[in-house]
Image 1 (cartoon, one colour):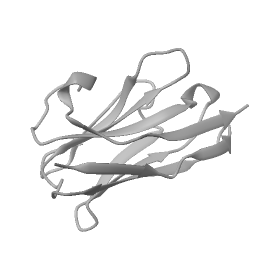
Image 2 (cartoon, rainbow, N blue to C red):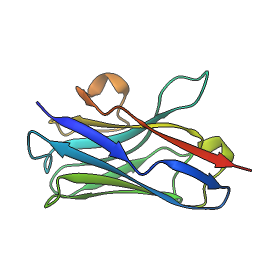
Image 3 (spheres, rainbow, N blue to C red):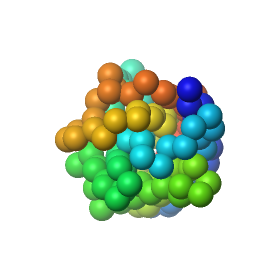
Length: 125
């Protein structure tokens, strides 16, 4: 079993930055596919970014490409999401997800067996 705890959310003005953290416990996630999803009010949960494999290959949704960076620190068993140039449309609850497989292509919700509780990000205009 893997437990995931997100932190780092908050309120920020448009154009600002936040760094989300996802701390894992229970097992090493160094070879897991780790991802961030988000869910805005009234909308479905959507994929944001993923990092996979020992070489830390990354994949991003088009809406965040060039602004967000996903990374992992295996020594801390933690995954990060650095979010820059934030926009009001980035407002959502952000969730961390984990799966032990190497997931090719654009991951979907159903691919992941482990989820955190979410952290709120609010971007004001």
